[in-house]
Length: 255
Image 1: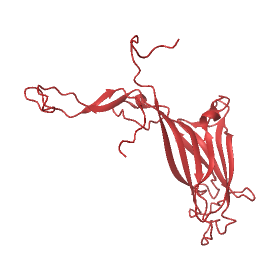
Image 2 (image 1 turned 30 degrees about the vertical axis):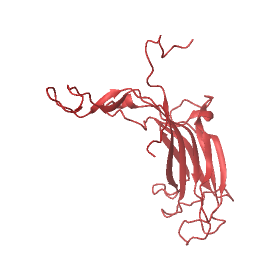
Image 3 (image 1 turned 180 degrees about the vertical axis):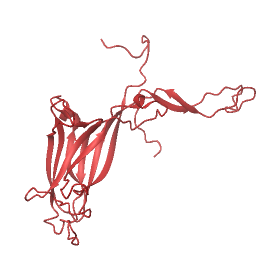
Image 4 (image 1 turned 90 degrees about the vertical axis):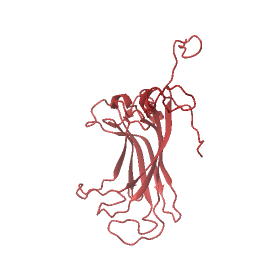
């Protein structure tokens, strides 16, 4: 029989037990150029998320170990912006000179590992894959190239996510030539065509047990002047104090 946490016969009460479900959107530009790579195309983009963070860190007076929670990305979607469907001026390394060359293929995968070795010796394996052909568009719109429920992918425990210290590699992507599978963008210089990528993450952020807010308790002898003293100590502005916090629901009362 479960323990009671409330009601007449309870010896205590639960004040914090929920987590925040957030949608986080990020944008970045995919390209293959790296000045330190010696002309070798860096065509695999690895997207990492720091799990040891708190997107609602209100306990500024506590030490980092008391504020840290496991901030987990539960699922995500990845989109790319197609190339414009008309000729662009000739430029070194720019492959988008026609509608045919403006087409590209996005290889998407989620890396997983099956060993307990250190990250330096782990070899990632593809767990959740998607291959999408993206056509150039005159009126551009976002094209979904990856969608994954990370909880379902790793819930069996047979495989686990790839971690580098506290950072989880959420997904990997590479943009290829749809005809022969070679690298779509050659790393000639830093003026190569860049492809805009949108990442939408659904994040579970637990509420840290240690929270704080600015409050003050002031005593005087007159109801009509809440912040004025006549015979006691003067009023002090609110200071940061420990308190217990929980999530009750979403509201749009300011709109």
